[in-house]
Amino acid sequence: MTQTTDPKYERSNHPVQTKDLIISAKGLRKSFGKFTAVQDVDLDVYEGEILGLLGPNGAGKTTLISMLTGVLKPDSGQATICGYDLHKDLHKIKRKVSLVPQHLAIYLELNAYENLNFFANLYGLKGKEKKERIDEALEIAQLTDQATKKVEHFSGGMKRRLNLAIGLLNHPKVIFFDEPTVGVDPQSRSHIFKSIQYLVKELKMSVIYTTHYMEEAETLCHRVAIYDQGKVLDLDDTDALLAKHGQKQLEIRVDAMDDQLIQAIEKLKHVDSVHYVDQTLVIHAHDLIKTTEVVLRMIQENQLEVKTFNVRESDLEDVFLKLTGRKLRN
Figure 1: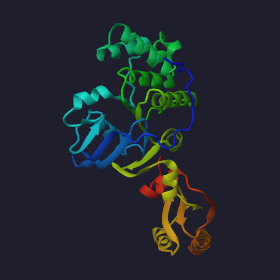
Figure 2: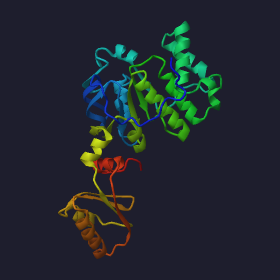
Figure 3: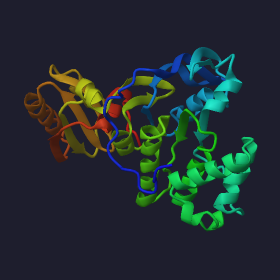
Figure 4: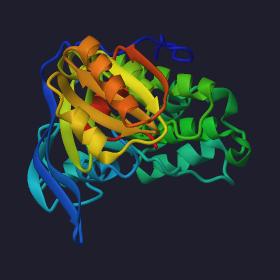
């Protein structure tokens, strides 16, 4: 095995060279009582791709990947994973996929090696193969030097990396990461990113990565699905999403805005969309100069005080706001 303690860390959001589908889902749906968590989702994932599911907490990301990994059964819809039917070949799919859950699945009273040995036994690994898989997983997660340390003494980031290592033991073709950097320090986040990029580049795995951090999706993922309320609202690479939905925007900070005034601004000739979030009026318009002049006058006529205003380029979080009407993180 090649040295992996410091795999090259670089931006991943470039076009995927292969066009071989590793996952193809059509119309996946899941409800809990009257609440629909996933609403008729179509999703294609290519071999060797890092696909980001970008959405806030409670958007339905975990429910979606729980269906794709066989943890939950869809109410309706079809999917093939690694060429196998989700409904007919679930036992075969489970040998090809792995899930690194948001909630840590580790034993604090054991050391790192003992944790990996326990899960390797569950996979039926034995002898030389088991030892090689454990050593490889420790190396990729950059925990080789900490193998005999009790996990209860690990930092939050080290626990996350051990969680990742466990997910590698079965040599999956597809690995799902559910918010893997929650509560970790910047150094551990960098370690996790490097490990994921190594999995894709060197081991030819495909990765589905859920996150509510815009900068993670921009840095790590080849393509990003804007996901909210159980729906994929758009899916493309970052540049394409910005080209389709991004534009310069006017931001005006006003302490209080009347709903009637917001509706009046929405009806202006050059205005495309208006959102009022965190006492800030965010306006997309195809003529910002005219729009700025008119909106500032309307605010003053309503005897409201403008704290600040500025014009800036959109980023991925602005795209999310435009498509969903709310911020990515509250």
